Length: 167
Length: 167
DNA sequence: CATTAAAGTTTGGTGTACCAAACAAATCCG
DNA sequence: CGGATTTGTTTGGTACACCAAACTTTAATG
Image 1: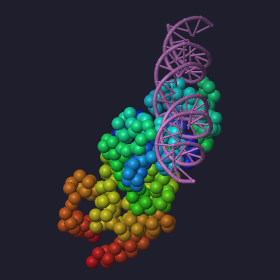
Image 2: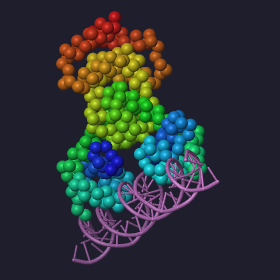
Image 3: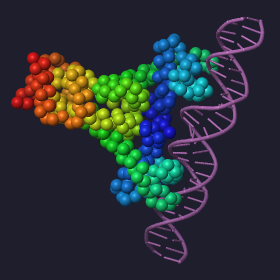
Image 4: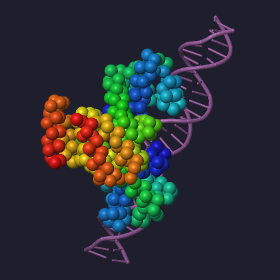
């Protein structure tokens, strides 16, 4: 019981997310595929499924295919959504390289609750919506973080160019 | 060995961070204070200190006062820095309420590595440096997330007001 | 300085999450 | 069909992080 709102451990949240992905890909999840996708042995999966089954989050009988219950699916989808939002921010706003964004999102999805992620969604929307920011403002961020601090006049020039583009 | 770059568990990272805080406050850390600050029993602290001692991160002899080694201090300061950066983003950019920002930062500090936090620092700087954004742009975010999506003309009005302020 | 209280340690036990490897069931296909 | 292969389960064991409570050391003070 270490986690955020779901009352599940990171590990169990990951299992649900993985099962959701496999359900989409195939129709059901198989122990072997879960194990491969998560990089654990099949025995570990059996244990986790027993636990998720007892919590009413997966439909699981030994030797059966595995599907999410409505409750499990709701959690899986929420975690997956958190992952995507966070990944979007890391990759497209902060512009971390793809691999790093992916890995970091995998960890962060268990540490930001719904309220925080919702606010992050709004923030990303805000950047795109507000006429003062948007795509080109994000792109200009690359120049900011990769070069030494810009001269004030460089900012003025950039600002002027932007104003010209707006007319 | 579950964690980000330090090779330490979240738990051990938290111990280092707590010891750093206590060193600042008093001169050394005491088992009792660590336990209180972290909400664990003293016995748990002894175990953690043994582990940190073996790793060369704290100076620790049974019944002695506790201080960080240079190596331990470097890690503790880096974790603390991550906490502060993340907290700043959550509280002052996303504008989450203080308690939530605090708690979320405590969890996130273990999931973002140095590169990600460095980039986040740059991003926050960028918001304040770039003449198109800055303080008032952040403040206007409140209006964006608390009300229904703004009308385009509302954005135009807001933009005009900003341009007027700039002259 | 001797006793008591506070601080620190140790031991045994819990729950989680994993692995390794022996085992059982299901499936494949000659 | 029926053995071989694959897939899934179980069992025993490790590591971590904690608690509860017995115990030991240190410190406080009458």
